[in-house]
Length: 285
Image (cartoon, rainbow, N blue to C red; front, side, top):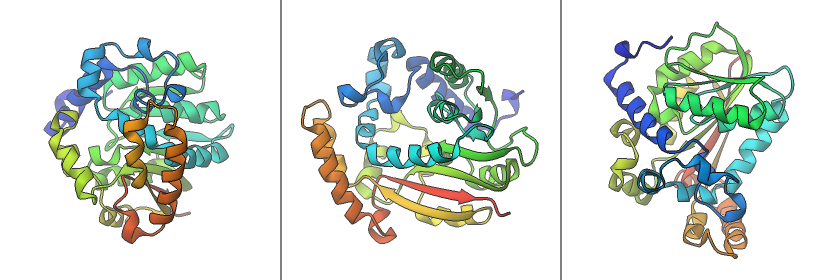
Protein backbone atom coordinates (compact mmCIF):
# COMPACT_ATOMS: atom_id res chain seq x y z
CA UNK A 1 0.00 0.00 0.00
CA UNK A 2 1.37 3.40 -1.02
CA UNK A 3 1.83 5.68 1.98
CA UNK A 4 1.09 9.15 0.63
CA UNK A 5 2.31 10.82 3.83
CA UNK A 6 5.82 9.50 3.20
CA UNK A 7 6.08 10.72 -0.40
CA UNK A 8 8.52 13.47 -1.34
CA UNK A 9 7.07 16.86 -2.27
CA UNK A 10 7.93 16.41 -5.97
CA UNK A 11 5.97 13.14 -6.05
CA UNK A 12 2.99 14.73 -4.37
CA UNK A 13 2.99 17.44 -7.04
CA UNK A 14 3.19 14.80 -9.78
CA UNK A 15 0.30 12.94 -8.16
CA UNK A 16 -1.77 16.12 -7.88
CA UNK A 17 -1.13 16.95 -11.53
CA UNK A 18 -2.06 13.44 -12.63
CA UNK A 19 -5.19 13.48 -10.45
CA UNK A 20 -6.43 16.60 -12.23
CA UNK A 21 -5.87 15.11 -15.67
CA UNK A 22 -7.36 11.69 -14.89
CA UNK A 23 -10.55 13.20 -13.47
CA UNK A 24 -11.03 15.06 -16.77
CA UNK A 25 -10.21 12.25 -19.21
CA UNK A 26 -10.75 8.53 -18.71
CA UNK A 27 -9.56 7.59 -22.18
CA UNK A 28 -6.21 7.65 -23.95
CA UNK A 29 -4.62 11.03 -24.62
CA UNK A 30 -3.20 9.85 -27.95
CA UNK A 31 -6.72 9.16 -29.25
CA UNK A 32 -8.31 12.43 -28.15
CA UNK A 33 -7.55 15.12 -30.74
CA UNK A 34 -6.60 13.56 -34.04
CA UNK A 35 -8.11 12.66 -37.40
CA UNK A 36 -11.70 11.42 -37.02
CA UNK A 37 -10.77 7.93 -38.24
CA UNK A 38 -8.21 7.57 -35.42
CA UNK A 39 -10.17 8.99 -32.48
CA UNK A 40 -11.51 6.75 -29.73
CA UNK A 41 -14.97 5.58 -30.79
CA UNK A 42 -16.58 6.64 -27.47
CA UNK A 43 -14.53 9.81 -26.99
CA UNK A 44 -17.44 11.94 -25.77
CA UNK A 45 -18.07 9.53 -22.90
CA UNK A 46 -14.39 9.41 -21.96
CA UNK A 47 -14.02 13.21 -21.74
CA UNK A 48 -15.75 14.08 -18.48
CA UNK A 49 -15.37 17.87 -18.72
CA UNK A 50 -14.97 19.28 -22.24
CA UNK A 51 -14.06 22.81 -21.15
CA UNK A 52 -11.41 21.55 -18.74
CA UNK A 53 -10.18 19.12 -21.39
CA UNK A 54 -9.64 21.90 -23.93
CA UNK A 55 -7.51 23.79 -21.40
CA UNK A 56 -5.54 21.04 -19.65
CA UNK A 57 -5.10 18.81 -22.72
CA UNK A 58 -4.44 21.42 -25.38
CA UNK A 59 -1.19 19.64 -26.28
CA UNK A 60 -2.76 16.28 -27.22
CA UNK A 61 -3.16 17.46 -30.81
CA UNK A 62 0.55 16.70 -31.23
CA UNK A 63 -0.13 12.98 -30.85
CA UNK A 64 -2.01 13.06 -34.16
CA UNK A 65 1.34 12.72 -35.94
CA UNK A 66 2.86 9.89 -33.86
CA UNK A 67 1.74 7.15 -36.25
CA UNK A 68 5.32 6.14 -37.13
CA UNK A 69 6.57 5.78 -33.56
CA UNK A 70 3.39 3.97 -32.50
CA UNK A 71 3.71 1.54 -35.40
CA UNK A 72 7.26 0.77 -34.25
CA UNK A 73 6.21 0.44 -30.58
CA UNK A 74 3.21 -1.80 -31.20
CA UNK A 75 5.10 -3.95 -33.66
CA UNK A 76 7.82 -4.54 -31.06
CA UNK A 77 5.23 -5.39 -28.40
CA UNK A 78 3.15 -7.66 -30.64
CA UNK A 79 6.17 -9.83 -31.41
CA UNK A 80 6.94 -10.31 -27.71
CA UNK A 81 3.71 -10.10 -25.69
CA UNK A 82 2.48 -13.63 -26.21
CA UNK A 83 0.75 -15.97 -23.75
CA UNK A 84 2.73 -16.67 -20.58
CA UNK A 85 4.91 -13.55 -20.77
CA UNK A 86 4.69 -11.28 -17.74
CA UNK A 87 4.71 -7.58 -18.62
CA UNK A 88 5.08 -4.51 -16.43
CA UNK A 89 3.29 -1.36 -17.60
CA UNK A 90 5.43 1.21 -15.79
CA UNK A 91 3.62 4.46 -14.87
CA UNK A 92 0.60 3.20 -16.75
CA UNK A 93 -1.50 6.36 -17.02
CA UNK A 94 -4.88 5.24 -18.38
CA UNK A 95 -3.53 1.79 -19.24
CA UNK A 96 -3.24 1.96 -23.01
CA UNK A 97 0.04 0.08 -23.33
CA UNK A 98 -0.76 -2.59 -20.77
CA UNK A 99 -4.14 -3.26 -22.35
CA UNK A 100 -2.51 -3.65 -25.75
CA UNK A 101 -0.01 -6.14 -24.30
CA UNK A 102 -2.88 -8.10 -22.72
CA UNK A 103 -4.73 -8.17 -26.02
CA UNK A 104 -1.62 -9.77 -27.51
CA UNK A 105 -1.87 -12.50 -24.86
CA UNK A 106 0.51 -11.36 -22.12
CA UNK A 107 -0.12 -11.31 -18.36
CA UNK A 108 0.09 -7.63 -17.44
CA UNK A 109 0.55 -5.72 -14.22
CA UNK A 110 0.45 -1.94 -14.45
CA UNK A 111 1.50 0.57 -11.81
CA UNK A 112 1.04 4.30 -11.36
CA UNK A 113 1.43 6.73 -8.50
CA UNK A 114 -1.99 8.21 -9.27
CA UNK A 115 -5.03 6.42 -7.75
CA UNK A 116 -7.26 8.12 -10.32
CA UNK A 117 -5.07 6.89 -13.16
CA UNK A 118 -5.15 3.34 -11.82
CA UNK A 119 -8.93 3.48 -11.45
CA UNK A 120 -9.29 4.65 -15.06
CA UNK A 121 -6.87 1.98 -16.28
CA UNK A 122 -8.81 -0.80 -14.57
CA UNK A 123 -12.07 0.55 -16.00
CA UNK A 124 -10.51 0.62 -19.45
CA UNK A 125 -9.22 -2.95 -19.04
CA UNK A 126 -12.75 -4.10 -18.21
CA UNK A 127 -14.15 -2.26 -21.23
CA UNK A 128 -11.48 -3.89 -23.40
CA UNK A 129 -12.35 -7.34 -22.08
CA UNK A 130 -8.86 -8.13 -20.73
CA UNK A 131 -9.36 -7.58 -17.00
CA UNK A 132 -8.71 -11.28 -16.36
CA UNK A 133 -5.05 -10.84 -17.34
CA UNK A 134 -4.46 -7.09 -16.99
CA UNK A 135 -4.62 -5.39 -13.59
CA UNK A 136 -3.38 -2.03 -12.41
CA UNK A 137 -2.36 -0.94 -8.93
CA UNK A 138 -1.12 2.16 -7.12
CA UNK A 139 2.63 1.97 -6.61
CA UNK A 140 5.68 4.22 -6.56
CA UNK A 141 7.86 3.36 -9.57
CA UNK A 142 10.99 4.26 -7.60
CA UNK A 143 10.07 1.86 -4.79
CA UNK A 144 8.22 -1.08 -6.30
CA UNK A 145 7.05 -3.91 -4.07
CA UNK A 146 7.42 -6.73 -6.61
CA UNK A 147 9.91 -9.54 -5.90
CA UNK A 148 13.20 -9.54 -7.78
CA UNK A 149 13.14 -10.95 -11.33
CA UNK A 150 9.35 -10.82 -11.74
CA UNK A 151 8.84 -9.65 -15.36
CA UNK A 152 10.15 -10.68 -18.77
CA UNK A 153 9.13 -7.39 -20.40
CA UNK A 154 8.28 -3.81 -19.47
CA UNK A 155 6.91 -0.79 -21.31
CA UNK A 156 6.71 2.90 -20.51
CA UNK A 157 5.50 5.92 -22.44
CA UNK A 158 6.56 9.40 -21.33
CA UNK A 159 7.19 8.37 -17.73
CA UNK A 160 10.94 8.62 -17.17
CA UNK A 161 10.99 12.41 -17.05
CA UNK A 162 8.51 12.25 -14.16
CA UNK A 163 10.81 10.19 -11.92
CA UNK A 164 14.32 10.17 -10.54
CA UNK A 165 15.89 8.35 -13.48
CA UNK A 166 18.64 6.57 -11.55
CA UNK A 167 16.24 5.31 -8.87
CA UNK A 168 13.74 4.14 -11.47
CA UNK A 169 16.41 2.34 -13.51
CA UNK A 170 17.70 0.57 -10.41
CA UNK A 171 14.19 -0.66 -9.59
CA UNK A 172 13.44 -1.70 -13.16
CA UNK A 173 16.71 -3.63 -13.24
CA UNK A 174 15.68 -5.38 -10.04
CA UNK A 175 12.18 -6.46 -11.13
CA UNK A 176 13.10 -7.51 -14.68
CA UNK A 177 14.40 -11.03 -15.16
CA UNK A 178 17.92 -11.57 -16.56
CA UNK A 179 17.66 -11.08 -20.30
CA UNK A 180 14.42 -9.13 -19.84
CA UNK A 181 13.74 -6.18 -22.13
CA UNK A 182 11.92 -2.88 -21.92
CA UNK A 183 10.70 -0.45 -24.54
CA UNK A 184 10.88 3.22 -23.55
CA UNK A 185 9.11 6.00 -25.47
CA UNK A 186 10.26 9.44 -24.37
CA UNK A 187 10.08 13.06 -25.47
CA UNK A 188 13.39 14.78 -26.20
CA UNK A 189 14.74 18.05 -24.82
CA UNK A 190 17.20 19.13 -27.54
CA UNK A 191 14.91 20.96 -29.98
CA UNK A 192 14.81 24.58 -28.72
CA UNK A 193 11.45 25.36 -30.35
CA UNK A 194 9.73 22.32 -28.82
CA UNK A 195 11.21 23.05 -25.41
CA UNK A 196 10.20 26.71 -25.70
CA UNK A 197 6.61 25.51 -26.17
CA UNK A 198 6.86 23.42 -23.00
CA UNK A 199 8.05 26.41 -20.99
CA UNK A 200 5.31 28.58 -22.49
CA UNK A 201 2.56 26.14 -21.48
CA UNK A 202 3.47 25.47 -17.87
CA UNK A 203 -0.12 24.69 -16.88
CA UNK A 204 0.21 21.44 -18.86
CA UNK A 205 3.16 20.09 -16.86
CA UNK A 206 4.81 20.11 -13.48
CA UNK A 207 8.03 22.04 -12.96
CA UNK A 208 9.90 18.75 -12.42
CA UNK A 209 8.63 17.41 -15.73
CA UNK A 210 9.75 20.48 -17.69
CA UNK A 211 13.22 20.35 -16.15
CA UNK A 212 13.72 16.60 -16.64
CA UNK A 213 12.73 15.97 -20.24
CA UNK A 214 15.42 13.55 -21.43
CA UNK A 215 18.49 14.42 -23.43
CA UNK A 216 20.52 11.71 -25.13
CA UNK A 217 23.12 12.30 -22.40
CA UNK A 218 20.71 10.79 -19.84
CA UNK A 219 21.09 7.47 -21.63
CA UNK A 220 24.45 7.21 -19.86
CA UNK A 221 22.48 6.72 -16.62
CA UNK A 222 20.40 4.02 -18.31
CA UNK A 223 23.62 2.28 -19.39
CA UNK A 224 24.66 1.92 -15.76
CA UNK A 225 21.85 -0.64 -15.35
CA UNK A 226 21.00 -1.95 -18.82
CA UNK A 227 22.43 -2.67 -22.21
CA UNK A 228 20.86 -0.38 -24.80
CA UNK A 229 19.82 -2.54 -27.73
CA UNK A 230 18.71 0.24 -30.09
CA UNK A 231 17.70 3.91 -30.28
CA UNK A 232 15.39 5.44 -32.88
CA UNK A 233 14.32 9.07 -33.32
CA UNK A 234 10.94 10.28 -34.59
CA UNK A 235 8.83 13.29 -35.57
CA UNK A 236 10.37 16.51 -36.79
CA UNK A 237 9.13 17.49 -40.26
CA UNK A 238 5.80 15.77 -39.62
CA UNK A 239 4.96 18.32 -36.91
CA UNK A 240 3.95 20.60 -39.79
CA UNK A 241 0.94 18.32 -40.45
CA UNK A 242 -0.71 18.98 -37.07
CA UNK A 243 -2.84 21.99 -38.19
CA UNK A 244 -4.36 19.77 -40.90
CA UNK A 245 -5.28 16.84 -38.63
CA UNK A 246 -9.03 17.30 -39.15
CA UNK A 247 -8.82 17.50 -42.94
CA UNK A 248 -9.11 14.89 -45.67
CA UNK A 249 -5.51 15.25 -46.82
CA UNK A 250 -3.97 14.88 -43.36
CA UNK A 251 -3.01 11.23 -43.75
CA UNK A 252 -1.30 11.62 -47.18
CA UNK A 253 0.54 14.70 -45.88
CA UNK A 254 1.59 12.86 -42.72
CA UNK A 255 2.88 9.96 -44.84
CA UNK A 256 5.04 12.25 -46.97
CA UNK A 257 6.49 14.06 -43.97
CA UNK A 258 7.09 10.76 -42.18
CA UNK A 259 9.19 9.66 -45.16
CA UNK A 260 11.21 12.88 -44.89
CA UNK A 261 11.75 12.24 -41.18
CA UNK A 262 12.92 8.70 -41.91
CA UNK A 263 15.72 10.23 -43.98
CA UNK A 264 16.48 13.14 -41.62
CA UNK A 265 16.45 11.40 -38.26
CA UNK A 266 18.49 8.31 -39.02
CA UNK A 267 21.46 9.41 -36.95
CA UNK A 268 21.82 10.91 -33.51
CA UNK A 269 23.36 14.17 -34.71
CA UNK A 270 20.10 15.26 -36.32
CA UNK A 271 17.77 12.72 -34.75
CA UNK A 272 18.02 14.17 -31.26
CA UNK A 273 16.22 17.29 -32.53
CA UNK A 274 13.10 15.25 -33.21
CA UNK A 275 10.27 15.16 -30.72
CA UNK A 276 10.38 11.53 -29.56
CA UNK A 277 12.94 8.78 -29.18
CA UNK A 278 12.33 5.09 -28.59
CA UNK A 279 15.05 3.03 -26.99
CA UNK A 280 15.10 -0.66 -26.18
CA UNK A 281 16.99 -1.79 -23.10
CA UNK A 282 17.95 -5.27 -21.90
CA UNK A 283 18.98 -6.53 -18.49
CA UNK A 284 22.25 -8.45 -18.69
CA UNK A 285 21.89 -12.25 -18.52
